[in-house]
Length: 469
Image (cartoon, rainbow, N blue to C red; front, side):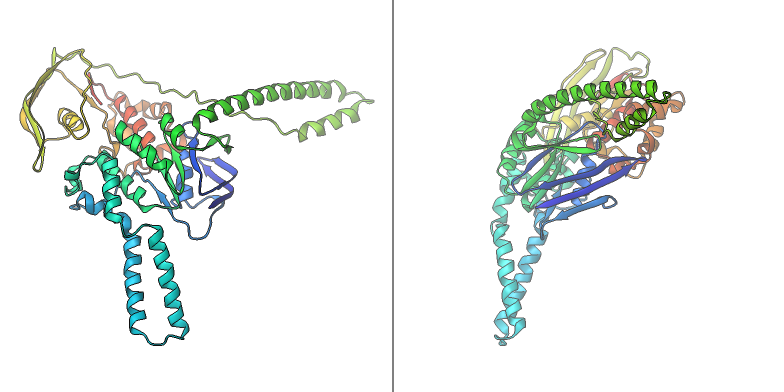
């Protein structure tokens, strides 16, 4: 279906990938693993064509279609959930329109023996086959099935997408991709905004998906259930395991143990050769022997073992003043989106030192309440009071809502810093794995994980005594 030959990519002065080769077949469900910064999201972008400046070739077979779940949403304001989801069929609708035109020409032309007439018949057959392949005459049923599976209710279908959070809009984007039935589907953290019920539904959907899938996910159970093949990115290469994630862990452990033993033996052999070279190179009778050892040593292909991912974030919050005993106090707090009342007459208070988990089904207003308390959402009923000396730190559910897409990583961090912490911005970014040229990336090109790391870094640059996540 798709072949990759000699793939290479420079990043920050070094190779991210070098001479990578693999083939993706139609039945493949591939889990992509690797430590932070290994290039998982980058590889997906290369396969999708979003990144084109690389060495080697990505060769699709025939006219295969490739779908990619992007993190950046581009919805037209004012569309309903249903209408936005139906945008998935833009190509199918174009094929239907073309088929109507072809049928019209066939019905009105009389040059039955001409080449042009035969070309129209061939195109009609081709379009009919394509529409049949995409089950183009049962689109509405498919849309309903997928939206319900991803957690929407029937009454949500006619609501404007503007009313939904970024996480719910990402579900719409995922629904559109699933409905397109591409030959190859590229998924970068598809479960990030899903509840357990929706994850189980998506898991079953992908297991039965007729095309190939390349998947990046931190949900290892999900990846084990869906994938039958695992690509491990390490040492600028890709190790290909014909196994799901759980089996890959076993095989990778065995492989690493064998590789470590082989390297240990090789290191001992190299040391012995170097000792002999140093011993004999000054001897007139042994000089030629020493030279032969040097040539042999130069030809040895050194065994390299990629360091295990032991990277840890150095999280130390800035000291802040002690707040008063009461942090928040809410009275008759309410929030509605249009005609939908999310919650109403909510009363509570939060005291210093409490650690509170906010539970509830999807759509019940957990994120909305957090945004109100963080000062992000201003439109609500009732009132709430911020306690004495309370400084709030806020970690958003969807970082794209709070990060400026046109600012770099460094600019976002510097904007969050105080005079005291500004000299340490680059060091702190480095501890969150933003090193070298990575600080010059625009936030709009960051992966979901990178955005979360940047958001955490920003929290450490300013003192606060109350954290909302």
